[in-house]
Image (cartoon, rainbow, N blue to C red):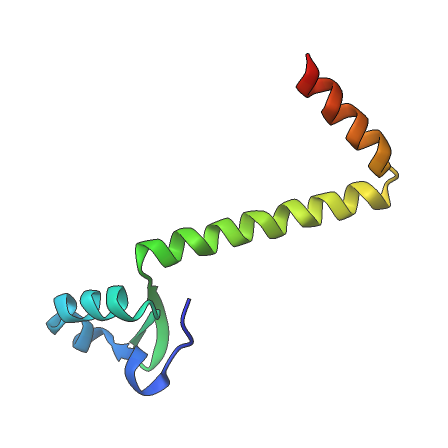
Length: 93
């Protein structure tokens, strides 16, 4: 995801309502999120679908890493050689 440009990527709800098509195009082309404000406060974020999916994939990977670290801390991990043996056995079956 591209870095937010404050002067271009923060719009009020009324601006968004009147220019929704152009803002959808902007988000798609720039790959930057659009922050929509209401009464001067952040209300929503509009993301390109591809950028949203990429963000979810990264989040899932981070969650998997966190789970793995927890398993290692609890002594549930296996050594490299043990993992290699398990994988080779499953492939040769």
